[in-house]
Length: 112
Length: 111
Image (cartoon, rainbow over all chains, first blue to last red):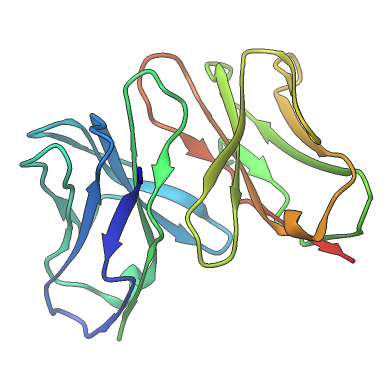
C-alpha cells in the first residue's frame, strides 16, 4: 500500500529534551516536506527536500532541523523543543510536477 | 494580510444541501488550485485540483477558479454526513512545488 508513515503519532515531552519525528514514504517520491498545523493558522511548511541531500527552509524553520540521507526518509529534529512548538505535525511527499501531496497521519506533539 | 484567506466555519448544513466553500488569494502568480479534505485525526487528502481558470467536476464535487477575482470555490451537491470534514484550499505557482494552504473550513452535515 502506497503511504507515508510517521512515528510517533503522539508525543509529550519537556522543554529542551531533543526529539526526532520520523517520516518514511514507499512511493519513490523525490519531494518531501514537513508542515505544522495550528488552529487559525492552517498548514505551514517547516522544511522541504527536493531530493537526497537537498533540503531548504520553508516558512517556519526556526527551532527545527531535517536531513535527507535516503530518498524514502525525512526525519524532523527538534534539538531543544519549546512550548511554542506544541502542534500537529505532518510529513508529505510528492513527485515533481504532480499536484497531489500525500500526507502522513500526523504527529501530535506537546512540549511542557 | 495572508496570501490565502478561508473562512474557518464551522458550516453546518442538513443532509442533501448544496455546500459552497470558498477561498480568496492575493498572489496573481498562483496557477494550480487544489482542495484537500481532512477528516478528524487524519492527514489531508487531495480532493480536486484545477489548473488556471475554469470549472472541474467530479461526481458531486465541482471546483471553480476565477483568476480575475482571485477567488476559488468548491461546491458539494447532495451533501452527505460522510462529507463532514475540514476542507482546505491550496494553491501554488508554476515549477516549484511549494503549496500555500488556507486555514480550512470545517463542514458539518447533519442527517
